[in-house]
Image (cartoon, rainbow, N blue to C red; front, side, top):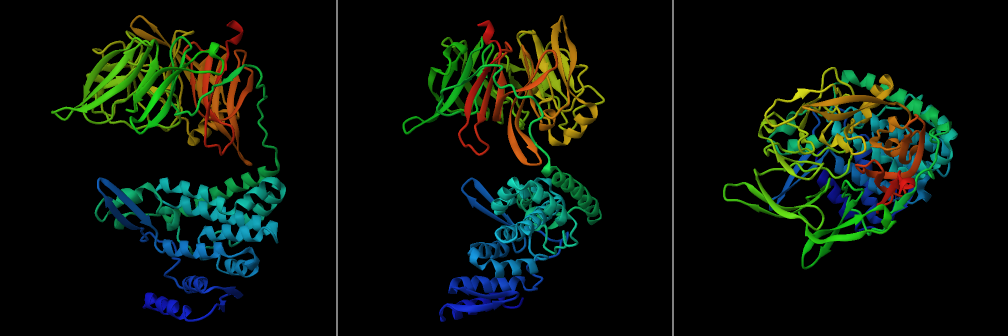
Length: 611
């Protein structure tokens, strides 16, 4: 559009010389507006009433605008899709209009729904709710479908998660759908049958630009112009059909009960809710059923640091302070008989780093130091989680999660992308061939060597989802418990096919590890991607939440008894969990509600009858 900026400048100047007026827009009847709002709406009219420059058809040549701002050592990379800012401003204008003007705005949004991105259809659904609930639900499904369809056409898969936040734009419709499931099902199926379900000329770049590659490309000269932002167009029909199948199943399930099919028995084992001020997601077990907990502190004098506390079953809900005022070097450990915490880090003249730390039994620690190359030092994870923190492999040290000692192994560290784990003293080492894709493998993925001299030999463990953090020690079994602990959504179909989540017990016998393989039958708990623990009373599976067709439901702890019975023993929105080595106590960091900000720490006692 020639001279667009000059035209808009003239419009602004004219507006400020006139009182509030009436304006006639395409398909929008007489709406009383102020001068500022009139200016914004005139931009809206110019942009949307047929000008191709604003809402482009999807092309592989489209690319985001990249802006790089530097502040000292910090680089800010800002990406935006073509006309993203214009679209955002237009949405802001529409969103700000009172619901009294719904009739005019709804008519306009419906007319131009074929060229507006999905955020506008969410707004349309929101405005329709008071006058036509079924049509509101229909447009809500269309908005969801279009957003997800745009997302799956992005070549950068990291951009695809963006659509999950959009339903918040029509939270009133979401809430209504939760209490009117049958109406939602019927309206949704009607939406999927519409010929204009994906009849949109709006470019998917509104979501494709949000991917990680936008940022990475911005740091490379001219790379952004060369990237193919969309998947091949030949793949789109298949993706649309898969999406239709998924949505139809989801909608048909709306009228069905989504209650937990697992029997609930939350009174079977006592639980302690610990009296703590806050949880820093840092806690770990010593071998004598003693839990060590860190709590972050902040002071003007000493800055950021943390205190360490201890808990035992006889304390009830109380905790006791053991070490105060530790500087926050983000490194402490508790395992076996030892506790360890970093006291200093210094750079040496040869470019290396010296790490000084205290290690030993509580109140009997001794100072040690190690010298490492720059980069990350792989330390023992305190609690299991779904995340995997990538570490560099320059350093030949690894911290044992079984006694907190740093162990050096030059030979294993020279293996490309080596993932290796020191076991208990004199037990040897494990290495891992991790691919992060498949629950099962046609070749061994875990290897063992009893010492630093021998090359690792394969164990009869075949799973691509095993990392060092997937190995724990069961003191009551005198065996290492190994299970896939990085289960992802794409493994669900595999679990359903095999009907099993495997786990292994590894016992040291002479120079070898004897492996015993077992199986947890696949059920509704398995399909919610559990973290698995081995206890004296059987297998425990912990899930953050249950994913259902009615949305996310509260998760918790599920117990598979020694005779195979499954029951739910603890309700919670779980964040992390950790099993004591004696198999008696499970520590759980959790939230009481889905949207709670402050977490709590509870411990379930499976051996209370023996105390």
